[in-house]
Image (tube, rainbow, N blue to C red; front, side):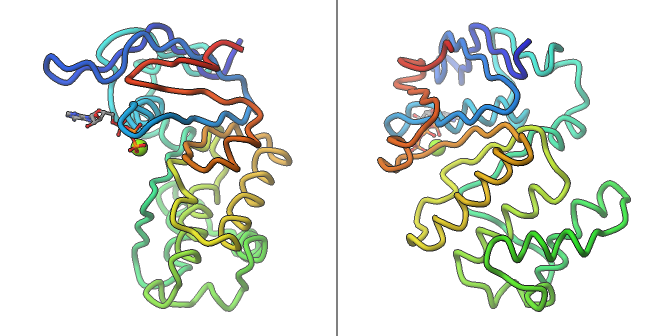
Amino acid sequence: MSLLELKQVGYQVGETPILQGIDLTIDAGEWVTLSGPSGGGKSTLVRIIASLLTRTSGDLRFAGQSIDDYDPIAYRRRVSYSFQQPTLFGETVRDNLQFPYQIRQFPFDQQRAVAALEYVGLTASDLDKAVVDLSGGQRQRVALLRNVMIYPEVLILDEVTAGLDAENKAFVWSMIRHFNGDDGITVIAITHDQTEIAAAQRLVTLVNGRIVAGGAQ
Ligand SMILES: Nc1ncnc2c1ncn2[C@@H]1O[C@H](COP(=O)(O)OP(=O)(O)OP(=O)(O)O)[C@@H](O)[C@H]1O
Ligand SMILES: [Mg+2]
């Protein structure tokens, strides 16, 4: 059984089809790279997978069960979506990393937070740093960490490295490789970056709302 199974998924706004006949299966632990021309429907597709939008036709199953049967809030904790433009909130880095624990009423795991920060080239002292004082690349790293403080099963990354310099890109990718390779988190990453496309383990290409390559395994 695949972790995610999309059968003939479509999305229409009014009379305009945005996605049509999407057949896609993704196994647990896979790393799928999603690419294609601008406006092809990539963000729409991953937002449907993340339960931020609802398909207008077809079936979407997660862990063998229709997405319609899940509580959306609980589902979004298992399938996390990272925006291109990260929004940090609160005053400090700590506020952001604590947030996933607070919403679940779990005690904050500071040791894990520090280990995670160190993994992406930040330090324990950055926990109390004001978010307004972080660079763009550091913000991106903290926003991603926030999404994985409590492990999701699927990490969806919508052009998270766009606009980052080479050093920050390398940090972000090493972090994602760690989540995928060591922790077995399934990754769906949208990118326009030719280097990332060339390195893809599995490349799915979406053009004009249809998968033109990589949908079947
Ligand atoms: N709510 C909506 N109403 C009308 N059109 C929409 C809506 N949402 C998305 N679209 C259109 O659907 C198409 C696909 O958009 P989407 O954001 O999924 O593309 P994308 O592949 O992520 O593009 P990019 O690479 O530029 O991020 C675009 O033409 C967009 O204008
Ligand atoms: Mg997009």
